[in-house]
Length: 395
Image (cartoon, rainbow, N blue to C red):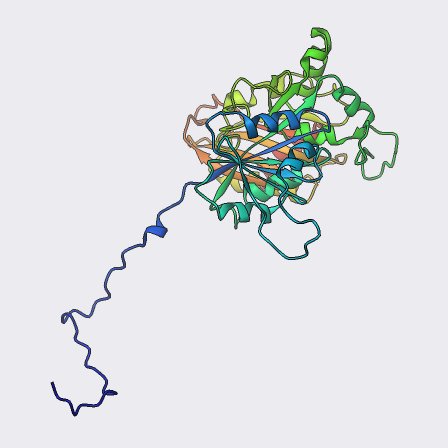
């Protein structure tokens, strides 16, 4: 070794070979795709039984690892008192604390249900397999669901599994008809030029039922069979797409298919749409379910169909210069057969929608009709089908 050589002398880099090509990068373990976590929104009017249901989920040994996010302004205050670990007087910005529970679940309580709570929760990925999000008794799930369905930031880590609404069999009709205890109840003013303030009420109960994928009619032990039949028929008239189950004391036979693993936004099958055309649309004066059937469309008509959806959902009007009354879309589903054999599946919540191609029988010989189901205010107007047909026929 030459002891006179300078310590600052730049060493000569030895190349491993004469190949100047860029070496292939080996992906790090963190690059492995992460399985998405399903989130279920649980909503229901005050006193419907959410507290009892969530208490069961948080305490029973059901073998599920569930992260439960309670809303501080909800009706689960008794549960929250046992879980509160944050300092109400502190102004320091701290992550939302999640409390580990004896049955393997974790839980937290937040003032505002939103993206921040979910993002904080996802930092603890691996400690849970499901997320349940409780809303307040007066919350409109239509404002919450789009955040977790197609949100660009959260879409890579979670997916909306479905909306579950609990209703009180004894009092739900009173809530729908009178808006009992509902500070958010509003009058339906009819058309744009009709300002009749004596129209039917739009209540929180209407909103929670119309957006639901599963409806649990609770406290059925407090009503007669005839009374329950009236309740079921009324709810079915509002939401002809949702699966309706009856419960006592919020007890469900199992969490799967009732609360978890709903997969409400995965597929749109014929079975999903079969209840929507049974003729109950006029039982409730405020919200109804309407089914539009029309012949299979061609591939060249797909952009026109998309134009119809965009105009209806984004501009709150119907294309094609069709006269119509005011309307409000809460939920939509559809199976649109295309003559080349494709089937398009349509899902929508308020002004957010998704259209995907599914494998299955198309309409090559016209055997399968296209079907679009709408839930909302004023959706039973003939103008919807007239507008759609005119739009598809336009050049």
